[in-house]
Amino acid sequence: MLKVLFFARIKEELACAGLELPWRETIADLDQLQAQLCNDGGTRWREVLTRPNVIRAVNQSVVTGNARLRDGDEVAFFPPVTGG
Image (cartoon, rainbow, N blue to C red; front, side, top):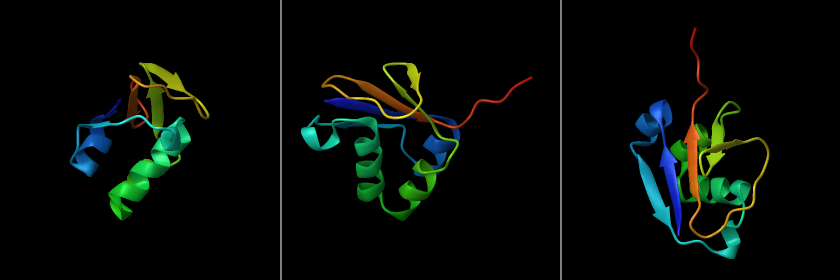
């Protein structure tokens, strides 16, 4: 099982705080998972999740680039953090 979480503006725009998905070989890495979410969710999900500034994390560690996923992983998508 993969636990997928959405935070802040992304959660609001998708009207979804999170999902639990069965882990399988077809979504064995972060890029494949993101593509599957975009395909399953339709146009709005694709628009939100493919923005160039979306931050992705696996097991609470920010990932740059792609990452292998394993059964039981937690994946999070969130907008860039700003502050002062």
